[in-house]
Length: 357
Image (cartoon, rainbow, N blue to C red; front, side, top):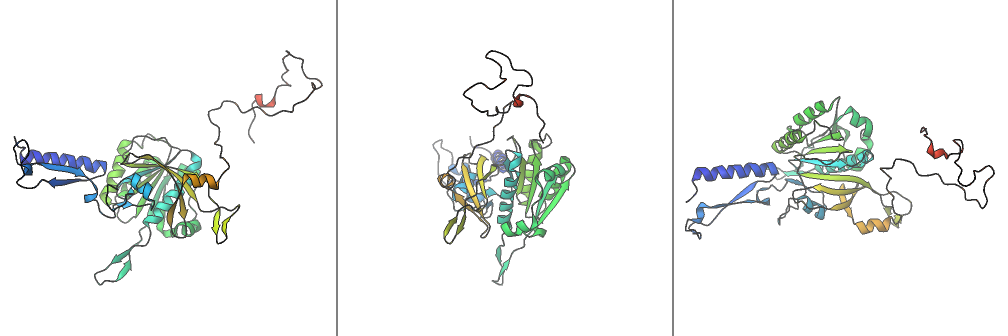
């Protein structure tokens, strides 16, 4: 029995709503008229719903310029869009530890620099004119800015090409106020992007709050970046989650070659924690402050440039390591005999509590 027109449109509406929540829109493909299926009914009554890039705008994604990363993030299903971060969406940028806040902020500023790049638009008079450069709003609480600080104005212009008046800050006394400001700012088309920086995993930033931010970003067609300091992954409405940590900088390139002992471009280690393609991956990106683009550094090149292994900090230990002592060929004067217990004064200093500083 052929499906009625009302029921078919209801199914299409439900599928479209689900695809909108997932961040993709369905494309309706009608079968050729007159074709007959195996069941004997007209194939024109059947409609295939497919999600793909055919309905996506060419500017729907913010491309990092790194093909492998953009393809892994989603948006590249065989077309020429190249994928990348969805512009009209909420995207999470995580820092596992508090000390990674500088790398997270630097990566967010790199994305803001890509968004604020001067764009040329074609007028009816066939004259190329630079498009408007909208500001970016950075929202955080007093605790966040006290811990990580504010970006340096002169560094913004030198490293990212961002003018001081293009980066606005909103310091809220509480997280509830910061979320309210972010929701109101996310709906404004007078902003190029909205950055909300949060510390840890607060209970107020739940799935409902991130759904509101994601819906506002979709409605305004502007990206909202959620920066997380020392946060654990949890369910959110963001279709993309990136985990950012600092990578060792390579030597500075000169005409004569790499300059030994120098510090080159800032580098970031990017791990994909969540994406629409569900493809894991780890990338090392270098930010080129001159051309304002990303360059990829291969993992093998990273080891070749930095042959000395980097030892991670120890964690989960209850006591500090024992202090090294001198090895003597004969017992020291006044040392206890074998089997005797040392006195309290003779115990090692590391066994007693010490006050730092």
